[in-house]
Amino acid sequence: MGWVSVLSPKKEGFSFPKSQMVDLCISFVTGLLVAQLNVSDKDKTHPMESKDNNLVLGFVVLAVFLISGVKSWTGEIHGRVVCDVCADSSIGPEDHVLEGAEVAVLCITKSGEVVNYQAFTNSKGIYTVAETMPESERWDACLGRPISSFHDHCNHLGDGSTGIKFTYNHPSGHFHAIRPFVYRPSTAPTYCI
Image (cartoon, rainbow, N blue to C red; front, side):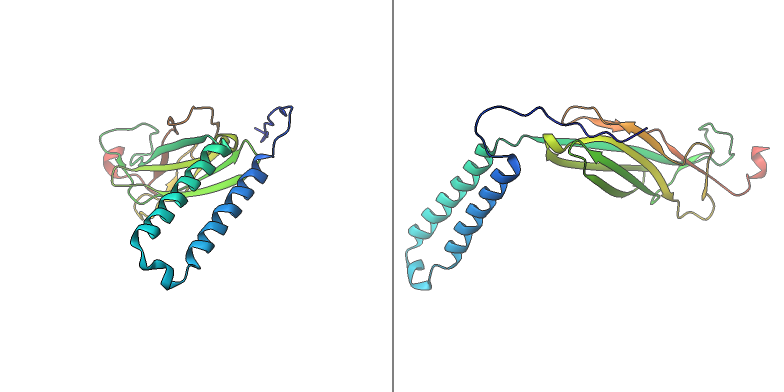
């Protein structure tokens, strides 16, 4: 599967590119913060004046984000890591989840940026990767892969657990579940035979 970057059609009319708009907004807010910090101690004798300045600064920051028109998007990826004790490629009562197993998730965004996440499983064997970003830079395609098990009794990767590629096309606030990654013991216990 190749990585493809999707470009938005260009809108007609006069406008700043989003990156320039965000840079201008950040510069403006930074200038206001520096000016606020440079106020001498004698000017801070009036508590109401200081509160008014903070209120104005808060409104300016809010206005900057509203004007910039950047919509946020939230995505989530999760899955499980399991020990297939009998190495029979099926989940049975003898199998168990692996806590503390390491998983890597590599995603490419719609803007072409590559982001790499590292996650560890919890006590239920579940790992989660989540991110909030601008809609225009959301995940486009991802690759999840197991890194290590950290369990001496179950640390050999099972068949088909080397990595999973997938397209991420869920709307904001929804998740993508990856099928479980499976580790096996070096030798199966005698009760499996």
